[in-house]
Image (tube, rainbow, N blue to C red; front, side, top):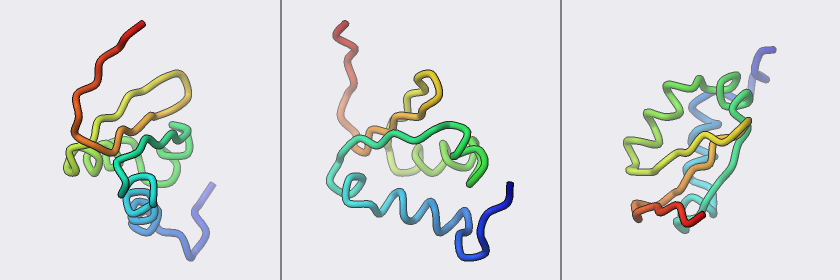
Length: 75
C-alpha cells in the first residue's frame, strides 16, 4: 500500500512529533505495522532517539514516551 500523495513520511513524522500530546511530554501509541508502512521502523526510531524520547515495543504497538524522564516498570 502506498501513501496518499499529500502524506509524505516527513509530514507524518512532523505531525506525530508536533502533536499536542508529544509537545506536552505525553505518551503516544501507534501500531508498528503503520509506522513501518508510513515511515519505516529505523527512521522512526532514529527520529525518536534524536529527540531523547524512549520507545517501547509491546505486542503490535510502539509506545512513545515523549519526555526524557526515567521509566520504571512497577509490575
